[in-house]
Image (cartoon, rainbow, N blue to C red; front, side, top):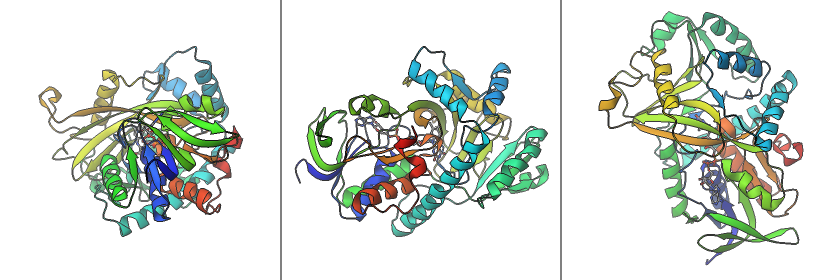
Length: 421
Ligand SMILES: Cc1cc2nc3c(=O)[nH]c(=O)nc-3n(C[C@H](O)[C@H](O)[C@H](O)COP(=O)(O)OP(=O)(O)OC[C@H]3O[C@@H](n4cnc5c(N)ncnc54)[C@H](O)[C@@H]3O)c2cc1C
């Protein structure tokens, strides 16, 4: 096929892979251009939740006040590095402006549609292909230390019930019965059966291998430099390893999209939201159900092959430096909710601990961008999935493929359009 393809996808994270899957199913030739290795960035060390009930946007009423309060107490998982970067400051202001009930309603409705669509597509993917990734349907257990927050969650839950995504309240004893690894001093728990989990780096690896067998062409270590554009049509993509032509191009570059948007003269307000995780062999008495520590915004995900603690949200630009404080915050946070959160307590003796940091592609309205470029007629954008890129990957891939192959996406993509900016 040489360097000519029907479709080129720039960015080989979970979103790029999911798009490639659907094109291959449609017998469209596809090449992924990736600056590093497939799935080596945000799609690698995330918490692995297929968090279908996570439809409420980050920007919801009261969030700004609550985070300022937690910051004063030194308890916020959100860290904003002081900056004079106008783009980041404007982004933060617009985020704050979206923290209202009207946005929460419309964004949750939009997310519930793409989330349900993705769930069905994951079902199909796993039923049709043997993809080994420690996939399990065990739900998600929200653990509360604070009785007031536990009780107040009933309002959140009532809202989720409007979308048939409600959870079940458990008192301490019921929670301990369901999950004996929980610390006895919790106030209560809400158990949401709608969520699933898997090991993201295994999914990426197995999916990549499957797609290569079916004809996917990969260019790894091939950073895109720019596009060659004539009269509003992209002709080719120039990378550090070569020049590649195609009929259609997809930008699935995650948190790095702002680097490319300058050449394209597009407004793609994505900021990197840095998160951390720590991965280890599964402790003997680890939890069996993924747990979300509500007051800390930390997740513990158990798999057959391992165990991960992940969380935090840092707005500090593109740095990939590991801040040890955030890592120890994950461990000390987990200790408040689980009996043996990391197994052997002497971490210095452990050789199996992997520290990781990744950049979530965050939009200020906490909705992804899934749309055709308003400027270049053969460019499509699939980014801005924030905290839910894994969860929404299959729905995004199918929507992009339908947009290009038959101009007939199965879900309403208006809430994810570029026009909203
Ligand atoms: C700590 C943490 C926990 C999380 N937990 C969950 C979870 O439980 N469930 C969930 O659904 N989501 C979760 N997420 C969010 C999820 O990881 C992301 O939303 C998702 O991985 C984004 O996928 P992506 O493909 O858009 O981006 P990425 O995975 O970052 O992929 C983008 C790719 O584009 C490449 N690229 C960029 N620029 C160029 C260029 N110029 N040329 C070539 N290639 C380029 C990058 O190298 C990268 O590989 C979590 C994130 C973090 C950080």
